[in-house]
Length: 546
Image (cartoon, rainbow, N blue to C red; front, side, top):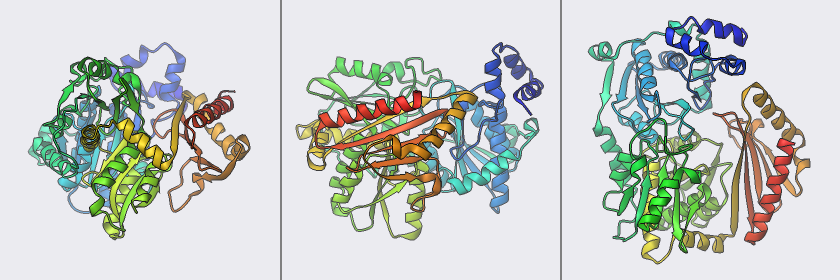
């Protein structure tokens, strides 16, 4: 069926869908909505909201949920239950309700949060309530047009490839989207199939997070926080009670349009513009923000009179150094740090200096969560800290996903510790560079939309795979993770290692129409590192855009 036939089919779904589709006058827009089905991949669903097969809407969410229901009924005996949470995005609550209705119609009990809730809380909730699975409606840090749907296993970990591929099979087997059953939640409640989740589970989560506290000495440090209209406002402020924190009022309350920012991504400086302005007015020492589902944190610190933002890799190294120094007495031969293959080696080298084992996973925090599960089963390792370059961190095993609540607590405690010792986080980072060498990391993202974009991403990966080692001087090793390396699942990632340990990695995004290039330069000289990075980036841009 081509995109025009799919378009005609969808005109018969319901009046609202029909009206939205008939209002589209751009043929390219119609093509983009129907040239493929929105993929339920190993990371679940993520896409632009709207009517169409390649969009997030009632039908695509219901189809994904029916696939989950079919998977649970086939793979698990006895009573089954699913915990569901959602963030502050437009339609998130309604998508969560659609998912609940489908599961209840399949005889599966649903626990649904009665208010917006962070993703790491959902991860915790699955195990706390003893559920068979979990689901969260969120598009994380993406722009307002997007939404998404992620599924978690019975441990609170996002589905890893073996499980995800089974669910994908069930999802893809559903042909008639209009035939997916729904049960009204009032009826479901009467049948014992639906139960709202109140504040008591969040309280239990915060109690577990508090166990990871490392420094509670009094401090005069001033902190500015923005939840970026998302789920972090209440839990982050609760976990930081007692510290001198002011919240950015314009971004305190939920707003699915994220009307004060271009994109609610704390990795980007402009998302923290209001927080930085408030920090200047209040002469604050630390400023930080969490993304809409509160699993990532971005921060900056006042240093030499100016606010300096800290990258994901830099914060990871700082946290590793701080956490391991504070936990030094409890570390042992099983203690382990887990990071992804596109994350800087700096944090790993710090961990090794403390005697920790270091494990690497593919990109995606689900793989870090999976390592925690493996360690708990085998007993041969103990998880201490895990992180990825994209501003996601976890200390503790209360969740199986990155957690900006525990990260907020530890970042603020770390900043207070150094403040009390007459240092900023930049001073602490420079101390790390003095000891371990200078690391310069960066990320380029190439947006390639539609059919042509997908084709170009595929052709570029083929070109780099076949000729990549010829494009760069000084390559020592090439890792093609699509072939399977070191017992890792196969994934479309290429990593080039240079003679001095510097590297670059190339991969298509798993959730967006993007090609991502990661750079990591090691050099004794900061000037040399920046010059090398600029030259390497210019070379990559010429290859990709030329």
